[in-house]
Image 1: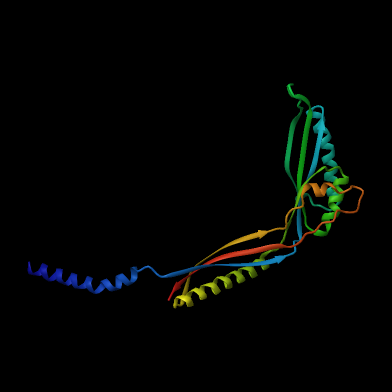
Image 2: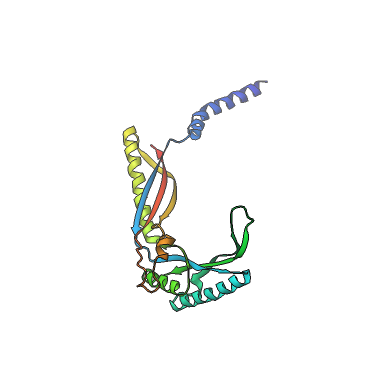
Length: 236
């Protein structure tokens, strides 16, 4: 019995001595988390355009045959404009009946529509206007919009990352100074990347181009490449 009492007392003394250290180790760290934003603007050097042909016929076969012939002419025009085969991809194709609707009467089937569109990558902005002119002359009656892109954004994004990090750090220092504390080690960093391209050209503006006129004027503008970063520091 005496030996058990001595052992229990020794264990109690050990736990008592260790409890401050355990409390220190398990205490949640004090943290401060701030977000920062950085952005760079660049002129895009690539464009995307969706173009194609809508054909009509009395039968589906007639509409399809007309559309196939028109699309072959369109593909030939793209090849003649220097567009590589890898930069042309079918984006939409449909066949649908066309009806005549009259009050009080059942819809009357009057023909069929066939639409085939492709998305084309234009790797030189200067080629975009002449290309639009050529595809319209080749028979394209559908141009659904134009988008722009920076082909090599890494350098600009890296600069935006630096700006975002500096922005978050600046705000963290302001808060720390206001609270009378210091910033310790960085505990975590996370980021989000955002591209903000110029607004696409609407179909109506493109389709107003006269096939016999000069190449379509195109304004590429600038693209915003932005980075948002969230950084968490330990408070000293």
